[in-house]
Length: 192
Image (cartoon, rainbow, N blue to C red; front, side):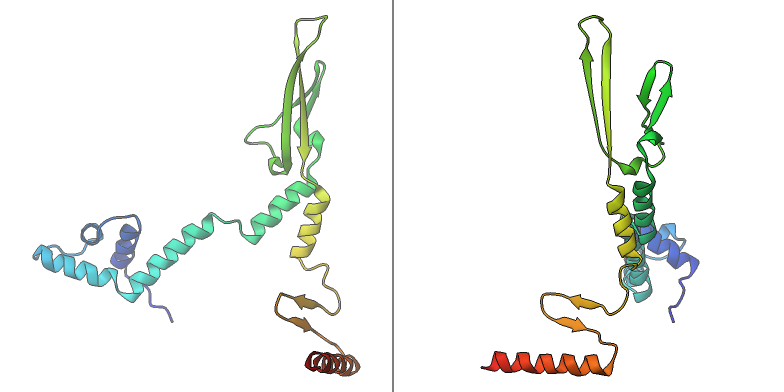
């Protein structure tokens, strides 16, 4: 079972993780500094290299690395956002025409694949006309990926294939016997 760190040890590990020197982390964590610096450095180094502190530093590094990668729930939320988005979610209609309304807070903004805008001038008027097109990601692909993530497509026997081997999962004795005969025939062909 993992031993917990004391409050000082936790603070020491956090200060080291933040980039402080061992001596500075030792002082900031509240350890005694009433003895020669050489002894403080030795004790701080011993603590910094103790298994508990090294493990805690690894946990902290892992958390920061994991925070930058989408977890399964986040991926499912993004794919759901894509699957549910409609062009009308990004448009406002008024008396003076329709407008595309997209900003940082736009719901389902992750569904947008591309936005193009161009300004054209009419010969009859001096007012510019702005044409904006919005292209969304394919909702069917998002639904397909969600189904794969939830293993909806894996009914019945499954075959896992990689470059080195094929695993065949059989569900009956008859299928097992047939599979073994096929493999025996294959071995005979390879030996000749």
